[in-house]
Image (cartoon, rainbow, N blue to C red; front, side):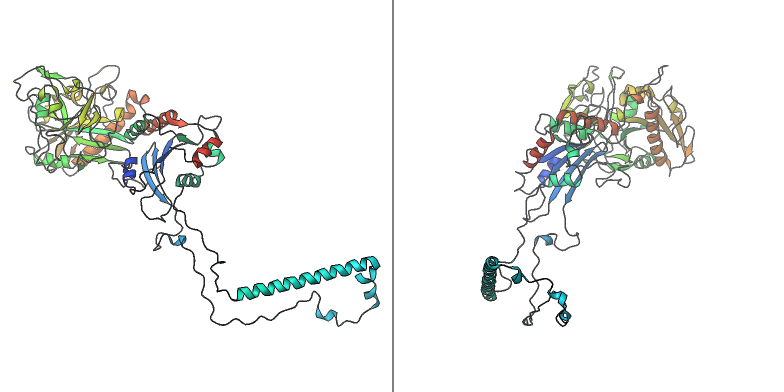
Length: 585
């Protein structure tokens, strides 16, 4: 529900989460604020990590209170910048409220002398009424006083008269002094205080969310942490664990291997060797391949970019390896899944291959991006350059059978001076799709009869052979990826053959089914939707589904582990002490 009406995100459909990190925010701060800038880390309801930055991004002295929030939740990473504004954005000056209101202008008409008004406590008609005997039934104060009290009464009356005279003289003196002063008097006029330029916006933000109450920071007896808890960002591996959380995907990742099989090709090495370029492919295949998605550059692509899960496979006298060239490829993404359509080629360590295998160069997709280091490719073990592969990658070896396979390389590579995990897929941010990525194959056949001899099991072992996806039921069966075969008929239509792994339900996930004939206009769309449906159905029907959770659940579990490692349960008084004394790091 969090993504309803918010897809695609401002970063594009390839990145449902924000690409902004703490380092990006710090680099955008003014130079005079970078030294004092820091992030406040909190965990909310044990399911959401908040990183609060209190500094604004402007150098104005009277800038508005600004707070930037990086929200890490099970649905992804989101960044918001909020300002406390007292006027709408349509106002010319957002700081209008910081300046005092001017006094109104004086009336040029001279003031007249006020006429004194004396108000009687009784109506005027009382004095016009004739006196009666009952009016004298209550004696006056003087008639009730004796000789001794009469002298005291006279003394009190004298003191009261003297006080009235003193107050009158004081009033006349003050009136004479104030009459010569200007109006408004600068010594007596009320002025607004100087506006503050430093704000504790983190505390202000949490207060506006209703998290700063006693109930929000007090530990519940049934839980280990309160609704709002501090995180210790000074501990070791804090930022490493934070980066690990960011690397978890928010959607299911699918890799679709698109292969062009020439007439009579039944060996894996022969099929992969024909994927080097689109120049020698028919225009129908190029159009179909381009129609599977929109072309993306893997050097700047923030989403999933395909992944190999190879196993040891030997053909002939040596191992055969596959790789994903570092060039543009079709990509498609929805709110729940993303698909990368890649054309694998022979790996650098394959016997008889060369170190300069290029794919998609000068194709209809346009020229590919410049390699990272000379001839750079992406294999099942990460990003490699020819000099990183043991044995030199072949080419002039003359049929040696003991080449070092890329699967035997070390667990880490050095790319551009920075280390990368060997299992890091080729995408910005290093999303660790893990067991959530599924795969399928799409094979374009020149001869339709070749689909009966296509090496499905061998190609599956080479491209994507994790046991949780490609293995069949316990009754036994060959390992194979779901495959869609396409062949162009003489009528201009395209014949479809769908092959599911043995032991699975033979009914296809649709909309393409075995034996269907489709037109050229709808071919790419139907193939793309069928591969998405197949992968979704495999996740629901597979026996490993009970042990593998969704990306949303995995991120939530990772946040809970992160909270257990770095949360700091403290008493309520200690929490507010650290908060008001700025001891939170």
